[in-house]
Length: 310
Image (cartoon, rainbow, N blue to C red; front, side, top):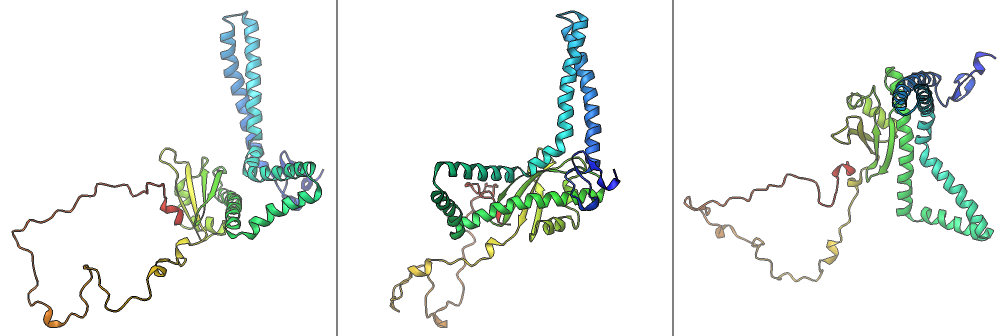
């Protein structure tokens, strides 16, 4: 077998125009970790289980039982570590997999329970109504962009790791739409930090990868430094013209001599009517103290987050 036709354990080589599912170095690294974890688990769990079992049964039988338990737990841990790259791929594509299963099984159930014309009518309504109504269509497209952004971020982080030659691919957590774009939560793995992403040029690379205007990176909580949040700005919701309905309530037939509010300044004031000396307050008059504003929380009581519109 030639080198160009060799395959890695979980994918294909990039040679010959083939696409790699799991890189060969990544598979070998996880296999080494799995072997180490198996023997460590076998030794530790087997020794502890044999010690405890020897108190209730013959020492030889307890030792054999400890070896069996250690081997079982080690095998489970070995399988999880080896399969982790594949499980991570399934996690990244989990929304699409669930959506595909829902479409396939939904169509099958619909065809079995209704005639063909009824199935086609229901599908036309399900697809046509969101496509015809703009608010629903915009909401659906916002969630579609959330799915796209998760994959774009994964590719961008993979490029960072390949360039720096250190670090592990982070775990892309769920995303949600915001008025300005999308918000994605990410759990960083060892080798990457928030400061690495805040370096000059890295945020611009994230924005280019996500086809966005701007990307802001910040910590998602104070407890874990690996838990970060990315706010992706794709549009400016505050830049649109807001049409106010207040001018419609102003009457158009107001006479010119209509009474005005006492708080309004006098109209047609001549210069002689202005006093020569300005009226000043007496020095002995007590000064009114402004009430102290003890509120330091700028967040809205309704849970409004201004960063959603950034």
